[in-house]
Length: 151
Image (cartoon, rainbow, N blue to C red):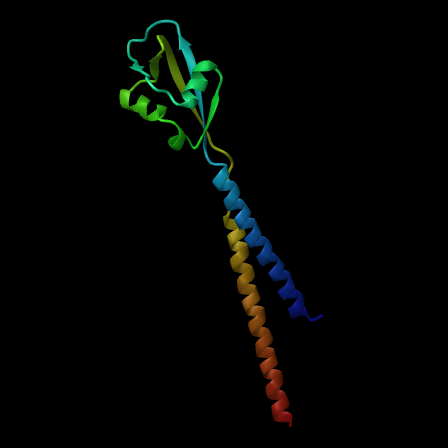
């Protein structure tokens, strides 16, 4: 097998692995976005500032039903409005069914896979394949010209 064919196979394999790797990294990064934990703490006394929570969503109910236990909220902006309410009322303390609670929010970032090395692999291997193919066609052209001149 010629050197150029071996190089072509090598860079084609790198290209395929880079494309698969970049798709995998982008998919992992999409699904491992920031996670939010909501924790409700029972308050013994009526706080000075609070707001009345009239119709809590399922995450808030779950946090209230299991005090001091983190409740995972996936893509929190789409699934709950407690953050907007706390911001609107400028407090994290609420009254619900005659009891008082304080909410704690914890944001957790997951490690994001770097996509850049895979993209560099795509560009480098693509460029190498183009160069190899160009050199192969130039070599064939020279051989054809030599054959034409010798006859």
